[in-house]
Amino acid sequence: MPNLCVSCHFNPPVITILGAPLREDTIRALESQLPLVTSTAVVPNKELPRFTFIQKPDHWKIELQQHYCDELHKSAMFITFIEALKQEGWMIRASNSVGDGEGDTTKLFFNRS
Image: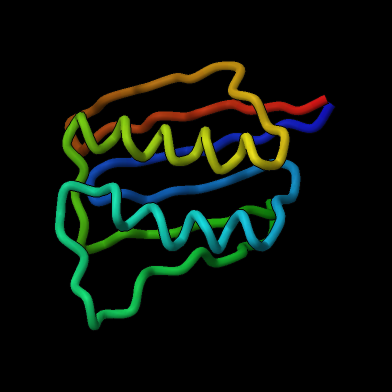
């Protein structure tokens, strides 16, 4: 059974997707949607941040350096992940959130059968 972990560190948001491979169209859809669900406005003529693929271990990472997420927008970001990954058959199985003085990190755990 393949597994996937989405790690979201706030603020600024840094997202890491680790585990089974995702379709390229899912990654591109997330790239376009994630900046829109942050608390800060998107600058219209500025290029949107992109996911980069990093090896060892293989994972995707995006840094939304000029953005911020309050509690409401963190939830909107989680829903964005849940809905996008559901299109590929992923179901959320667990989540974990840890806060420290520098920010907080929430991990969403998915699997598909």
